[in-house]
Length: 173
Image 1 (cartoon, one colour):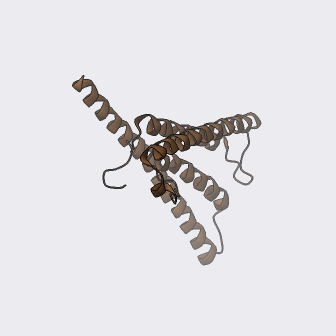
Image 2 (image 1 turned 120 degrees about the horizontal axis):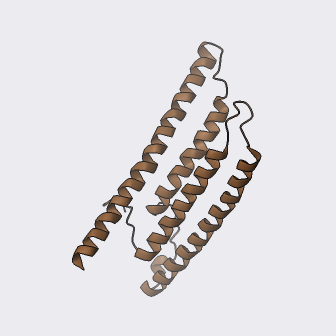
Image 3 (image 1 turned 180 degrees about the vertical axis):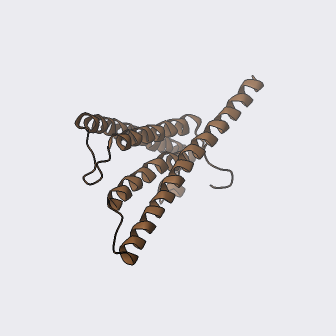
């Protein structure tokens, strides 16, 4: 039994590391590309009077990608804004009930959000929507948003089941 629990804890840590590195690394690369495109556009605009064509569209797409890539990470780490004005006034038992209710509401909300994004992604795929200037297909972004919100929902479920924060780095909370 101890070996099984030790293996489970180690696999959870491995999953958390992969989760954080894959999503965080991808978000960092997209953020770097966003910065590079902005730099090229500004330099081209003011030094050569020739802005980068389509930079506005690329910026929009990359900003959406960065936000949605960060969503599961912030959710898993419990990094969303929390207002706890009345928590010190509540008993420990009521706080536990409140925690479970809030987590269940979050799971429901994220689940609905994922489902609505899924429906929208299918519609975007069916219509073969693209950006106006560069004609970049929007399907990849729509399905990436579905996947990341599903991962955020999964992270909420894990947080609720384990009543802990397996994705948080030691000392951050």
